[in-house]
Structures are given as structure tokens and as C-alpha cells.
Image (cartoon, one colour):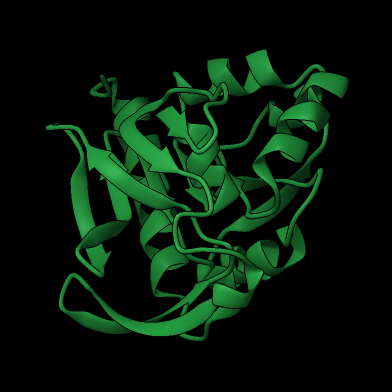
Length: 200
């Protein structure tokens, strides 16, 4: 197997180009994903921000919902903003279906409307970071197997569970690349463990 780490970015809607740039800067090769066939041969996947209901409709149009679910049962996925909503197992305000790959309850538009979007300072595992919130969801509940990596206003904004990770903000819009670098390293470790036959 090649040393090249290929990480897909769902490219149906949202700021997928900025995610591709961030992944490239973090040492991975980004691959735009628009069909089920595009999932073949990639080591991980980013679900970008956008509008989650629109994204769900586009996933249905492209017959991608089930392939994404199957991919997530075997490989790491990182969801930001709308992508975080898609990864949660419970979505409220309003209730909508999701991939259900992480034990989270996520409230859509939890910080308010577009006018309430903001740039805030947070800390990620001891490192200062910028968080860009745009019509951001709020994680209202994190299950016992979820690791909270950063918080804002007492709510988790960056979290992981097993091979998956979510951010309720837009790390691709900030300098520093801390979050994408963390995901790339996690995907690299997962692939190594998979090759060694030690993944669960």
C-alpha cells in the first residue's frame, strides 16, 4: 500500500474546496467525493458545512446515503457544522434523519440565525484556537463514549468517538490547521492499525 494518505471531501454542497486546501496543508491528498464510486480507495472522509437538509436531499439524489453509512462503519469521518449534524444519532430543532455514527444529540442552528454567527477563541487540548461559528449547531448531549476535545459556552464544539470526529465550527476557515492536522493523524493511525489487523 502506498504511503499516500487519501482523504475524501464530500463535494455536493458547502465549503469543500477550503477543506481540501486544509487537508493538503496537513499532509493528506484530498479527493472530491460526489458518487459512491469516489469512496473507493480513500482512507477517511470529511463532511463539510453547508445546509444539512439540503445535503440530505443531495445524498438521496446521488444515492449516497447508504454508501456513506457503510463507509463510516469501516473508516474515519470528520463532520463540520452540517457534517456534525449528519454524524449525530439524534438531531433536534427540527428532528431529522442522520447517519447516527456518533452518540450525540445536536440542535440545529443552536446559536441562532446567520446574524448570530461569530468568531470566538477556544482551547483545543491546551492549544489556543479560533472557532468560526456560522449558523452553528449545538451539541446538547454527548454520550459516555464521546471524548470532548474543546468547549464553547459550556457546550462541546469538538468531539471524537472511536474513529469519528465532529466540530460545530468551521476549522477550514481559520489559520493554523490544528483540527485538520489532528484528523489526518488520526486517519493515519487508523490505517496503520487496520493494516496490522488491530482495529475494532
